[in-house]
Length: 197
Ligand SMILES: Nc1nc2c(c(=O)[nH]1)N[C@H]1C(S)=C(S)[C@@H](COP(=O)(O)O)O[C@H]1N2
Ligand SMILES: [Mo]
Image (cartoon, rainbow, N blue to C red):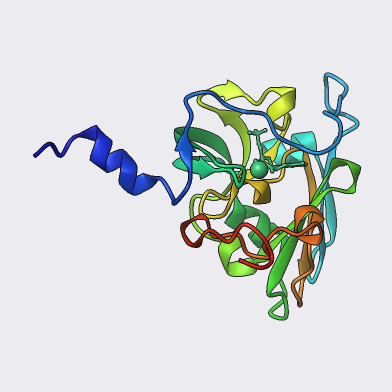
């Protein structure tokens, strides 16, 4: 019996997912363009927080960073293993916000009004990052430059590219794909793809 890489890999791939070695690009809408110095970029923290703030790129860059290794699983059926991301841990953003106790969910806001929702506890899972880099390289425009969220334990649609803000809310509020039939939570191991799953 062989207990090599194949079996290990299998344990890491949720049901009905296929491993890809490429990095597919998937999104709704256009890839945003920014000025080279990102002076037209900002990040707003709002909702049930003590500090409603809008941060510049310089202010974002001054926050503590970390790296995380993980596997990602897209609802359309591909999984990409062994990604390395570098960025700001979710808990650093929460710390900065001063999240009020009533807040139980978050809504990530991206370009063009695109949103994604998740429970606050899932948002705060260690390893979640507001990432600038993937596998050592600055994110390409297609993959979310200058910053995207990465939450690997939910389907990858929750990992907002071109993220521009976070809202802390009391009640769960459907995001873009969630309004269009996708699951409110999106656990790939339970195959929570659509609202009826
Ligand atoms: N802003 C924004 N973020 C988004 C999306 C989108 O349409 N807009 N699509 C999501 C989906 S469905 C997936 S699978 C991943 C794809 O990320 P990638 O293109 O870097 O592989 O981004 C997610 N983040
Ligand atoms: Mo996706």
